[in-house]
Image (tube, rainbow over all chains, first blue to last red; front, top):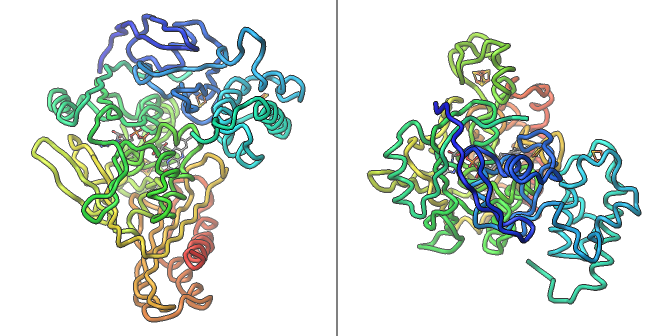
Length: 170
Length: 327
Ligand SMILES: Cc1cc2nc3c(=O)[nH]c(=O)nc-3n(C[C@H](O)[C@H](O)[C@H](O)COP(=O)(O)OP(=O)(O)OC[C@H]3O[C@@H](n4cnc5c(N)ncnc54)[C@H](O)[C@@H]3O)c2cc1C
Ligand code: SF4
Ligand code: FES
Ligand code: FES
C-alpha cells in the first residue's frame, strides 16, 4: 500500500471559473471543493453515495461528488450550489425554497437545489412525478418532501414562462 | 468522513493503454468505470489498490449501435443512457427498465452497464467500515476466516446484487472481454460463478469492453420486477427477469432468472417443461411461481427476513410474468 500523501495540481472549471488547486492525489471532487477551494456549500453527509447531500452538476448531470475521484472532473464543467445565483439575484429555485419553507435544517438543500436545477434546465415544465423521480437520490430528514416538491414546481413554472421553447429536451 | 486510501489515478485514452497500465502494475492496480461501487468499497477498505485505471476515457468502450445481428452496448455507457436509449427501449424494454431501477438518479449518471455486470457481491457483514468489520473479527470474503451467515461453511455466499444481469441473461446476451492475449466472448449465462468472493469469470487483467444482445431476442416478451426497501435508491432484495417466446398464444420458450439470493443469479429450472405449448394464462403463471418459490432460498446475507423474501419470490415472479403478458 502507498503510505504517502502526495499532492498534485488539479485544474477544475467550477461555476464558470477555471481554478487550480493542489490536492492529495486520492481526494474526491467533494474534498477538493470543500478543503481545496473552500466551497463548503456541497455537504459531506454519508460520504459513500447514499444520501445526495454532496450532489453537484457535472457537465449538466447531477453527480455525487463524494464518490467522484477529483481527476474525473478535470476537463468538465462543475456547478455547485454557490454557482446557482447570478448577479441579478438568487436562482428562482432558491427564491421558491425560501417562499415555500422548503428547507428546515438545510443540510440536504444544496444537493437538492443542484438535482432540481439540472432537471429544470432540461425541462422547466417537469411534472410532479418527474420532480419526485429526479430528487429520488436526495434524502431529506426534516421536511417530508412535500414543500420541496412545491418549491421546485413553482420555480419550474417561473422558468417555463421566461424560457424559450428550444430549451426542450437534453 | 470516509477517507480514501492513497492511490494514483490513470486516465488512459485507448484500450491498449489501459491494458498496458494493468500489465505494468499487476495486482496493485484495478480498473474503475463509474466508481459508484468501487469507490465506496475503497472507503470501507475492502480494496486498497495503489493504482486506479479509469475506463471512462477509453473510446473502445462507448456507444450503442447495431453490429452483426446484435445490439452492441459499450461497457462504459452509463445506466442513465441505457435507460434513455431509444435503441434499447424499443427492443429490450426490460433492460431499459432494469437500468432505470438501479440505485438513484445521480448514481445512474455515473454508474455504467459494464460496472453493473462486474459489480462486487454484497453482504451485511462485508459492506461496512474496517472498524465495524474488525469488531466482528472480519469474515472469509475479506481479512478473516469465518462466515457470519452460514457460521460453518468455508464458502462465501454474499449476494449478487446487480439488476441488469438477470435481464441480460434472459436475452441471451454475451460479454466481450479483452486481455493482454486478445479478446474472448463469454455468454452471460456462463459468466457468473457460485463464489461470493470472486463471482465472475473475468480475469483481473481483462477489460469488459462491450455487451452484445442478439436482435432476435427482441421478439421475446420481457418482464422485470424488483423488490427493495426504498423504491428510490436501494439495492435489490430480489430481482426477477423473464422472457417469453410465444407462437400464437402458445409458449415456445420461457426463461426466468432471479437474483439477490446467492453469489450468482439463479436461472429458474423446470419452467420450459411446465410451460411449453401452453397458453400463458393465470393457471400457468401460478404453477411457474410455485416452481420458482420451491427452488429459491434467500439467506441472511442481507439482514431482511429471509422467510419474507422467500414468500416474495412467488409474488415478484407473478409481477414479472404479468408484465411479459402485457408487453
Ligand atoms: C447507494 C447505492 C445504491 C445502489 N443501488 C444499486 C441497485 O439498486 N442495483 C444495482 O445493480 N447496483 C446498485 N448500486 C451499485 C452501482 O451503482 C451500480 O451497480 C453501477 O452500475 C456500478 O457501475 P460503475 O461503473 O460505477 O462500477 P465501478 O464502481 O466503476 O466498478 C465496479 C467493479 O467492476 C469493475 N469494472 C467496472 N467496469 C469494468 C470493465 N469495463 N471491465 C472490467 N472491470 C470493470 C471495477 O474494477 C470494480 O471492481 C448502488 C450503489 C450505491 C452507492
Ligand atoms: S457471506 Fe459470509 S464470508 Fe461472505 S461476505 Fe458475508 S459474512 Fe463474509
Ligand atoms: S455525501 Fe455524497 S451521497 Fe452522501
Ligand atoms: S432540511 Fe434537514 S435534511 Fe432536508
